[in-house]
Length: 450
Image (cartoon, rainbow, N blue to C red; front, side, top):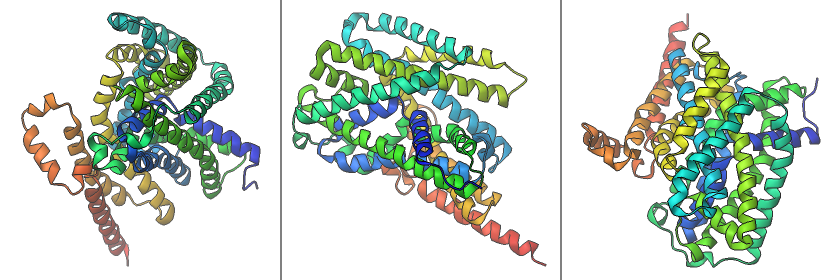
């Protein structure tokens, strides 16, 4: 019986993992973080890599350890209703609400916006996103080898150009990083701000949503035992995540350098566009724009396909897959026209709610691999996490909504939680829930003892 993958197979799985989780957000947020963190970029980067690199790897390992076939299977460990609610919320978040529209707006921000006059930006965005989602819908309705072709050709091309850009920036820096003082939250809590910034990549959510694809790929290579699957997943993931961490380091550093010339940009898309234009002029902007647009197209096609298949499977008596694909593409087109900065701002409250749930669910799956499945452990811990995460959701809502009825007492109650000031208010309630669940399991054992 086969116990380990061959070297070429490890590279294949690592490439697959990189393709699954590395998208638009993985480019724009480290660059923006570098501009804002300045001299505090190292602790910020460490925090960012924990949520943007380490946790996605643990999420995929958790799926393999528990031998789960899908995100819905993991959710059922808490309860049937929770599985439906969490699966729908997560796929909508990485789908038509935020991640899919973001692929179009990042493509426009980097590839087209620098060449369009300010007064034409809105109309050009509408035209660009219409064409973008027409292509997305075409391939989503006609799955074919185009994704494999793009993955084999575009990813190396993208990495090559990004490498040239980064090396050029290292050799001829725009300015020194050490003169850029950290601003806003990075001035006080650089590590925890970077940790929360990693939420924006949505990689933990993507790992839970698509981790079964990776595990099934390893199974097709001949491994069957959960321990062997987990080992191969982690080894393959180590190569992929090391590359991601290296790219994050380079983008953060180059982003910090760009502050000397451009100051603080509105978002990471602007940062990348300015860096490319600075070193390569119009040609650099065009090449970077084409490369990122193609990469985002690939990501968007995959997300529309995954969301359509998931919802048609969860609700088989509603819409067919083609109708869901059309619905998600049209909805994403509408959302994409509110602009990149607004999409990022509106996604934060949802991410602050979903990420703690995802992190704790991964931790519980890893614990299950050691002690076996115990439902009270899942249920009690997730209840504690969910209640605390709801306060983070309210706190992250736009300031205009803070005037709604009951918002003031809710915000005050959330601020009482330990670690809430650094966005970690869910940690203690999660541990309390875990303790209650442990006691409940112990009580069940006593009741079952003759």
